[in-house]
Length: 165
Image (cartoon, rainbow, N blue to C red; front, side):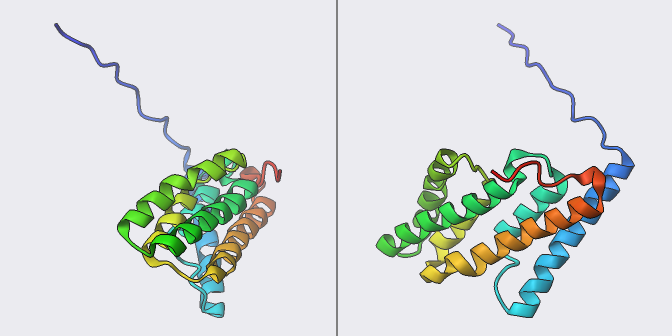
């Protein structure tokens, strides 16, 4: 018995102009995150927030990249992870459970944001204090969103955001 696997073609090539715009957007977003981190001393350049900025730069029209998803995704994932680690303490197990459980509120809030699951995992590994919700999570989310909005104004072909609610 032979089974045939249908192979899908790779995604179409991205036009060079779009590659350059996405690269400039990523660079600007990540430099702004790094600048605010450097000026404030806050841990804003953590991998989940870098991934959020990357989503905004690479796919500004994607539902995952919209302000609602970034803000509510990171905040809800942080709340879940902080609650969990207050009961269990930090561990790789807490990180795995926190990341998995963070998907429920994101979906219930209609704000899915995959990098927020990484935020929950980081919290599960480290068990930071409750103020982590504000700094760096809220601050980093606002910086990423603000960078996307600014780039959306400067680069009309990179319209962002598509919606706020």
